[in-house]
Length: 126
Image (cartoon, rainbow, N blue to C red; front, side):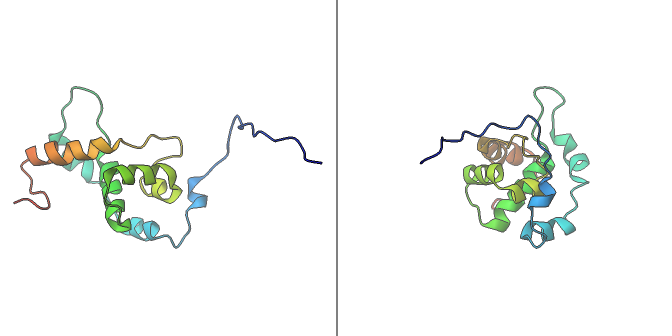
């Protein structure tokens, strides 16, 4: 006899550590050991306005772009999807499971607008 279909009821609270789900030999752990982005925020502060809605954390943007380069993810849309579902990628980007991943348009807006307006040399431009 077939038993009744079981419908999972979500737990009210979860005890979850993303650290436990990332293998010790994962490529992003190796990169993270040597990656220090503590100076990024002060260096980029002059390029941010004090008015308007809060921006996406510049360290998160850099971590996501670095992740995309290292893992061969060429599409910004795909990169955001992968960070959304992959726990190792979330760990590398310092995102908890419940944290929102930036929208893919954030990257293109920065690449086509803000980065060019900064006066800094961007890869592919001179």
